[in-house]
Length: 187
Image 1 (cartoon, helix red, strand yellow):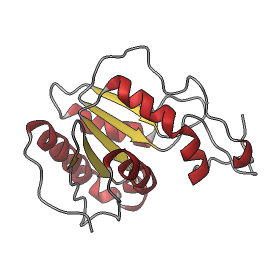
Image 2: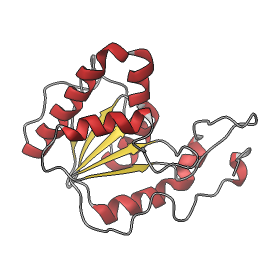
Image 3: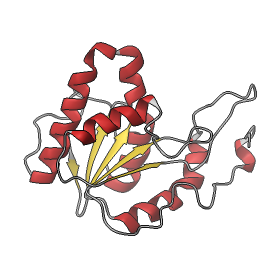
Image 4: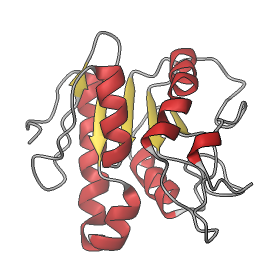
C-alpha cells in the first residue's frame, strides 16, 4: 500500500479505530502508522517508551492512536511524514475518534503532531518547548493537552535523557489528572 502522491490521498476507514467507546484518562497521539503495526505499537521505540511512561502511573487507562490513519511511503518505498494536505484529509476522522473516547489528557508526540492538534483542538499555536523536557499542560473546556517531544527523537538524539523524558511526561500527566500542573510556558 504505497502512497506516492498526496493529491489522490484518502484516509483509511478503520485504521486506529477501537470497538471500545468508553472514556480513557490519557491518549497518546503519534503522527502516522508503521507498516503492519498498531498505533504506537510496543514493539517500536516509541511504543516501548510510552510503556515506560504508563507503567509508572497508577490507575491511568491509556489509548494510543495516530493523527494520520495509514502508512505513508516516499518514491523509494521508505516511510515518510504526512504532508499538511494529508493531515487535513484525516483530521475529521481523528477528531471523531477523540470524541468517542473522550480522553481527559491528550499527549501529542512530536512537533508536527503537536502543531496540528493544538492549533485545531486547543485553539492555540505551538512554537516549541520552553526548555529541556519541560512539558506544559494546556487546559481547554474538557481536555488537557500535553505537547511532548517524540520518543524516537529522545531515543536517537538525546538517549542519555531517556529517564528524564519518561519522568517529565509522568509528572505532566499526573499533574494534569490531579489539577496541579508543572510550571513552565511555551517559548
